[in-house]
Length: 259
Ligand SMILES: [Zn+2]
Image (tube, rainbow, N blue to C red; front, side, top):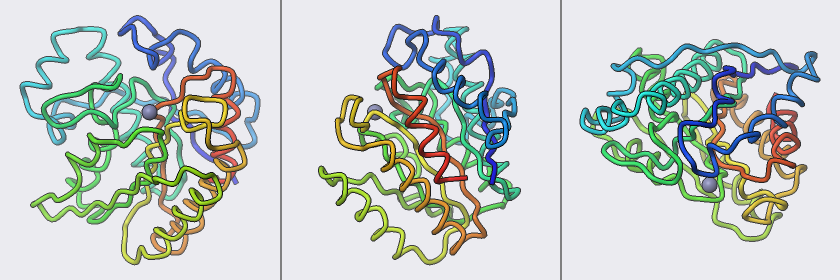
């Protein structure tokens, strides 16, 4: 099996902010491993999300706030465009992982925090929904932190788009995996599986919980249940993860199960 990796060289740019997600060198280990395994990974390059794409998830004043900072806007729109490309690739039948930044799951319609600016996940799913490609989506958010932006924008909508989100809460690694599988077993009709893939819950990262093999299992569960429920349509987008030494291994471990 192979997997498409959505990536743009401009994501290496670390001048847009001074937070840990923007740190220089953060994506280097990930892309080194990806480029060393061409039999598994094919890299594809996205274009920026349009203003219309962004405004499906954000109100105009938040959009203008970010737009007032030129480099931040350029890279945030490019990250959102990467998420859209991953979602469209998944819809067309090929699993994909978007190595993008800045991350997005703490961005709400009218505000943002936690190193996030635009909500990449919401922008990508709402694009598919607006094109009538999906009606129901499932998000596994395995970042250390709850994706409040995903929840605020995507849960309890009144436009007919239904999104269920799992932010696992277990504090023991075996139970964590069980919690994810128990939730997936109950999903019956969903058109696409998406992951807010943060790796800050890693054993050698801030959360000190999940080992590389746990990420492989999470990837496998996404694959297995998406194949059962929605013809395997699945994608993941990069969120947190801050130990540069282990990020490449953790992302690669997830993708090996996910592919
Ligand atoms: Zn996080």
